Image 1 (cartoon, helix red, strand yellow):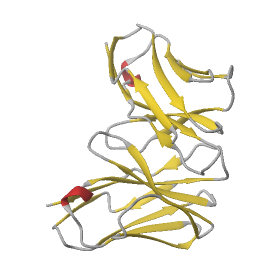
Image 2 (tube, one colour; image 1 turned 90 degrees about the vertical axis):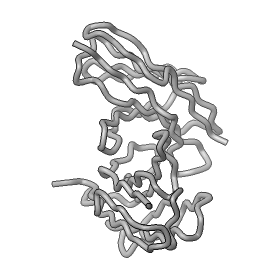
Image 3 (cartoon, helix red, strand yellow; image 1 turned 60 degrees about the vertical axis):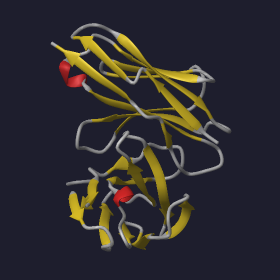
Image 4 (cartoon, rainbow over the protein chains, first blue to last red; image 1 turned 180 degrees about the horizontal axis):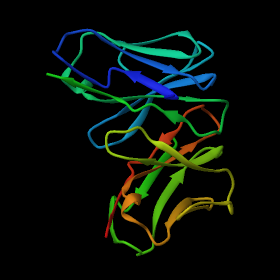
Length: 112
Length: 110
């Protein structure tokens, strides 16, 4: 059983399109995250939800909109995709503070 | 702002050649320092959390240590399967997020 699963694993799309990435966790964790890993492998926080409530919203263009229908799911919708959005997006979850996160396997987004 | 710097960027070892990876950090009130391992095409895999200076944790050939300014990941007698990118991250007192370093790419040759 995959603990944190993301779909799709690969996403190739044209500039200007709108796309969504889905994430589900079966660990019973109360907090979920979206991280972006750029070409230099830097992992940077984008959003965090705790029990469906947005608690972290870093400096991210408002073309990115997260949605958490319940505490086991956190989706990421991206409008008007740009070349610079190409990266690997990771979903993660944790239970409480100061504990290790469990990451998904990532979604490689390529905008052409 | 919380910051993490990892060195070296890349490290090549022969099988059995022990070494250490460094993670220097600045953070407002350390809640935890985390080590992860990331294999190509996969998500980071949690290794350790250290909470206070002087703390040490071990797992197989890996041992993590923590001071007030840096952490070390010691690798004893590494094997080729230890090849991966090792990521360090900190969590400060003002946010429920991890701030990551750029990682150290480790290659162990047999």
